[in-house]
Length: 57
Image 1 (cartoon, rainbow, N blue to C red):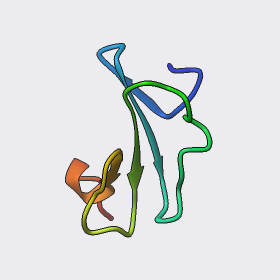
Image 2 (cartoon, helix red, strand yellow; image 1 turned 30 degrees about the vertical axis):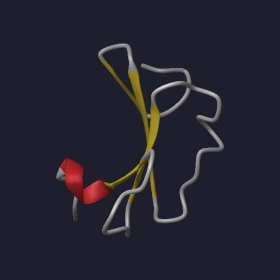
Image 3 (cartoon, rainbow, N blue to C red; image 1 turned 90 degrees about the vertical axis):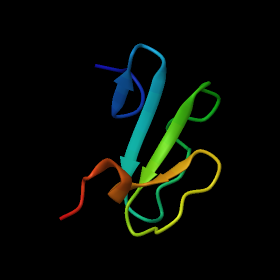
């Protein structure tokens, strides 16, 4: 379990999951960190749409 963010993959990639207004406040200054956001169709830079992970409801 990571101390920051929601998911840590391969001890390398940190993901913070949230709504469409979710930002980098909780994971700022962490290398290889990404925000997974709901309510967005297209990702930019380190922001990934939640639906790409199959986490739709």
